[in-house]
Image 1 (cartoon, rainbow, N blue to C red):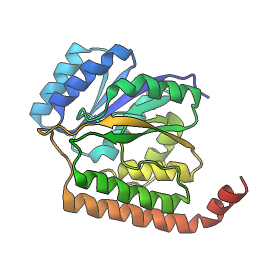
Image 2: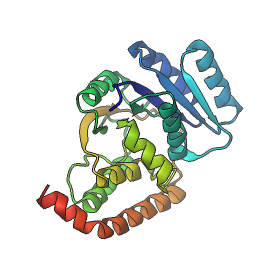
Image 3: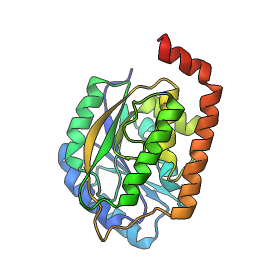
Length: 247
């Protein structure tokens, strides 16, 4: 197994200003950072160039066109493996997550290096009702397709992944590269035998925040992800039965 050597991975699309604030707040932890420019327009590219100039040690991966969160994560994981990192802590660029939890999550990953260490949201009064409802819907379906109650939250983007299973997933699997990504990688890695632990993360929704969620398109994508996961669950049912009752 690789020596524990984590990196923070931040996919960035249209959140240049917020990302600059996020990087300024986490640079104190002395953990390497990979930013992925997910085919941004010039305004966001300008912010990313400023971040790179200010914090010269961080890595900036640039995609020629927008690939979605999953596509940006894939590019970042591939680069992380090339650079020899053992784990990636995925952090959203919009500043919604409580970044002060980074040291805690890194410590948990260090003590359980084969597991995914995932956040579940602690909402404040800014959380829209439809967001809470969406999380409950996704969590219910995840319990069905994994035959497990281990998934406390399927959508929170604050996670630490061991590099090897994450790399195998993004290079060998066909997966949704947009809003279905966080759910699909979590479920598929669990189905492949990667264990998981969940811990709370405070989540805030700024009133002037930029959302990349498109209601019709992304709900269709998420529905397709669950359809695919249900089909895989049925095909894997003998394996899941063995794990549940005999492992």
